[in-house]
Length: 158
Image (cartoon, rainbow, N blue to C red; front, side, top):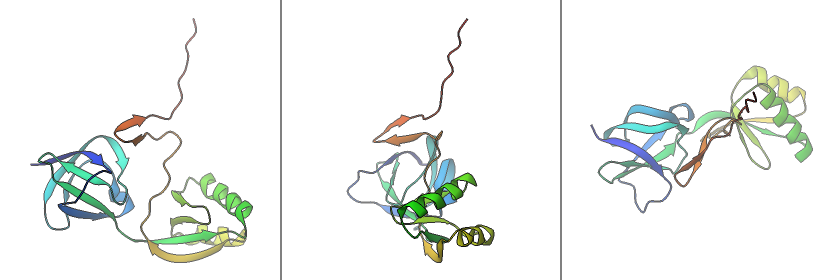
């Protein structure tokens, strides 16, 4: 079985694509099938979110480009940037995955959350779009092949 062992943002042309929702794009190791039927084992060193446009580098040099499947979401907007920031705090306080932009926040649909946000004055619209939520504060992230683990350490003093 051919494996994909790394993710690259730098490639000239993809051999094929794979279209996945956000949940399926957050993986480390899993059997996958490209949009045109190429079966491969995703075998990464650690779990990560595969972003729209990332390339999965197969052992034979081919690249499978990741496509984000549009999902049913809410687009949340505030009256102004201060209001949007307060809405972001409310969403984060509930530990909801959120994609944050300068003028809007995208979250998964949940009628209880919608009611809460509208009660706080948010403008909430049903949309269908790719979803790439922010990583958590203690989640590892990588840039150009090297990782940074964001966590905390403890000094032990005798």
